[in-house]
Length: 362
Image (cartoon, rainbow, N blue to C red; front, side):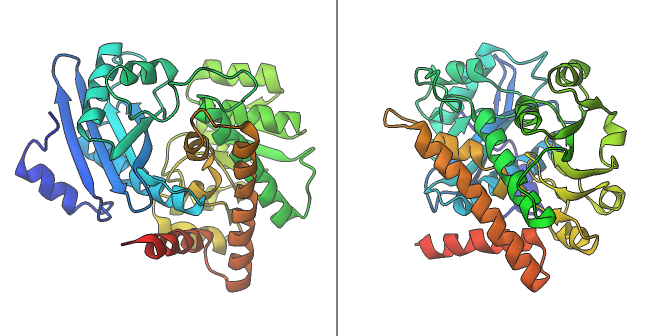
């Protein structure tokens, strides 16, 4: 069963700086499978709390709690800004996905999801894949994507990373058009931080469009593959942030932008797939002061949740792609409002999302 292990756990979550009136935060441990998990449901005002399951070897439980609270809140805002009747949730498993993860662990995760009665719908995220969701689906029907037959003609079928990357690609085009007054990406210099499931696909889209890529990842084989496939220039993780470029695309873990790193940025546009890119949401004013155009993360990386929203037998790729292309219009509205008012883009995106909550709250 899911449980808060002690009164101090509850107190620490309720007083946590990232706690934002979350509807539920559930701790769970399954000794038989080794599962240690946290599920956070931020809001179900617009629909059930949909969000991926991240498997990561957190340094401690405090880091895991911080991550799940921020990610679940971001899913609520992401769905609202994308115009979806969907709430926000997230789950994290405290484990190394390459060493610790097993089918039994994922089946135990499925039983946890089932115990929540549909308030939370699980999906893939960093450290989980299609096989993991199949194991989860043995224990619960509350799985977003990953259970329907594969449609080879649908590039987003069962793979949220593909649609996330495509949405980010559309968002980068919007940012380049606004800042550089150009639609053609040939010769555009893009520094990609992180070449996981999303970053590697994004690199492919940018390469096909003629962009020049600079890439880094802590996993050396991923870098080597991108160099071979896309002709990218390999950089170390320490070099990528300050690399002179037109666009910096963070596609790894969050909190990469703070006062120190913003001062070192080598690009005039930040537009990438990572969640919670700003260590402090208020730091968007520092980007504004430096003249850096920032595409708010949950506005540009909404492709995954859009893809899941259209899961089902009536799904048509044309509908998914049309919704993905609306990311361009949303970002353009944010950029233009920021240019007119001088306000940071993150603050504008937050207000737009909260407006939809208020309009739909009971």
